[in-house]
Amino acid sequence: MKSIPARVVVTEVVREKELIALKRLEEEENESAAQFETAIIQGLLGVVDFESESEEEAFVNYAFELGDDGESATCAIAIQRGWAIATEIELRTVLDSIRTKGRYIPSRNHPLLSWWQTSMQ
Image (spheres, rainbow, N blue to C red):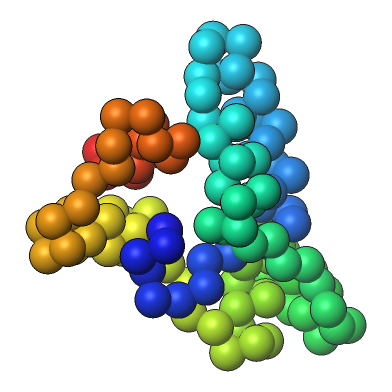
């Protein structure tokens, strides 16, 4: 993620949802929750929250339309702040470009190797 020439963030809503889901899977020896938290702690992944009433209002409207709190929070914050949104498909494309054009693959002991491999599938 350090190779991506932009700040990469998730919303607090997404962070909470993902951690809950990943911790449920953690019982099955899933390393994803630890990797997700490590990426945040190391500053590889930022976490943002609503900063204005207009962001919160947009969130409620998107939640009504989309039916998903994570996507709604992401859209509300990104649109209100004029930020771009990357989907999982776009993320795979970016990681593939980093792998091929940058000739980079995380080392075997890199803390985000499992995340990288999962994201590339």
